[in-house]
Image (cartoon, rainbow, N blue to C red; front, side, top):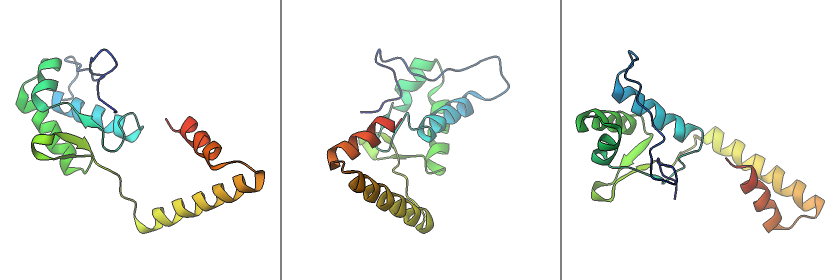
Length: 129
């Protein structure tokens, strides 16, 4: 499962107290960047507000503000007591059509080359960050 922490459980978010950017915005920006670059994929659970606040040495309300902003932006969704998760990305009609066309082209080309489905999937997974 994707997490916002590394293997040792340390968050990969850093707060710079020597910048004019507010701490809540630093948290929001860094989580949004991890979602955008695929480090945190759809469905990844992010730490509770309290846990992240404690780890980063921030007030609970500071992290809560970052999470509320991320939720308003459609980056994360809170599912009650289950936690807060990265939202699945929904494509608009044009993007979905373009993705379908790209997938059709990819499949047709790999079939022409004689590759098995498992090999085609492995190739995609190897290239997905």
